[in-house]
Length: 200
Length: 389
Image (cartoon, rainbow over the protein chains, first blue to last red):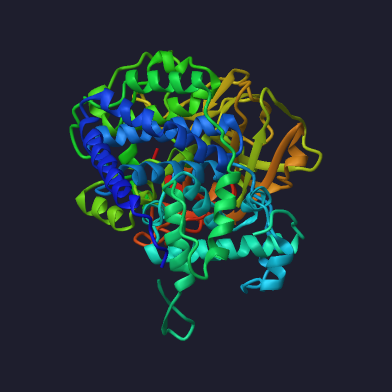
């Protein structure tokens, strides 16, 4: 297992406090709009970033961000909220807004080349030759199956695997397996496309 | 992580555990340990995070949205007279949506095009959550700005605690909506010729029209007869017809359908419908500068219904489904038949099971796979509903 640095305990406690504070604010938001404003200020950039990365235009990202917060506000006003993390719940709304937006867009190109890859690890020699760079790997994310791309973009938004499991409606274990496969597939694609760059 | 292999046994995946733990550290802004044999797993993740572009929202957007949220007349303080009912997967429950009224603030109705999705969302939410409270008598000639949401608005209401509990089981809020009812178009048989009624083929087409775009419908090159229903799923639709048509606005307080005269401009927004004899549609325009128009055309037809045969202009159209009525329109005994559109993205709790009832017949529709979004042609289901008039 990864050895965690000592300061992680304090940071974990801080995250827990933020979660608790979010929960309290969300409860008050039903009758106190300013409490919702605090939550909005806290998450609008991250929600927007997630929407932008998934929808790829500022206009679509702004619309999706607007819908996400409106839905959240309305749900809170009706007494609905997840019993878990507010952040996870909010990203769940954003995720489904994005899914809906994709429905009304043209179908994405089939990823035939992605599916050509066998589910095998690239060998050490292959990886050593590839030396993929972050930017090139990043460019390949949208060629992953959509659920795997969603997962990685949720990671970029600061969600841990448990929170992502809540957003995607999957089990904790399924998320871990999926992200492992996603990374393997990314590296396979990088190897396939002959990506060169930063050595590991 | 323990997973099942193909033989049903379980196996551990330490690499997946390792990667997840390291990624949690990276996500939290910490640097994972490089001890051990797993640096090759975590290094690409660090590279990826370093490559994520920083794309902040426009300050003006953030400020505007914040103000909208702080001032929006959402049903925060509105009394809810009874639990909001979920639009049932059963098309027989179509009447449940007609009892609710809605009011959209004029400021939102007149908002810029980019705020239309917000207006639609607010409209839906207000209508579904505070129908009784906001019920108003609207003058007949007042433009109606209310919409029922297309699937992209994704309602979240449910009928009771059991449903809510089941929603919690799957860990999400909006997927609980199994099949939002989009809208329906009303076919008044008395308004159609015998030729237009002698049809039973059904085709659903998806149309898109660019911002400020225009489609001209001329005389078809190949013969085609029947009736069409256009249903707006996104944007604004402005059309002219050569005969009287029937416009459906599902959530109005003063009635479901309007009957504009021939030659008048028919304005529809998301969730609205218009029913017309094929060949009577003269033009369709997208009046908005900022929003692309998407609409479905459901044709009950004989002949050649292909978009190229019907229209000219710079548009995108595709055939999204084929089906048939159980009998020609002329053989229906009721004076009216509705063609309804729903959206089905079933969850494991509410699988979709199309069935014919004495009221409704499932005509066509690829059901969307749960948890996936594959495009505009997936998930819409067309029904024929017998109405007693």
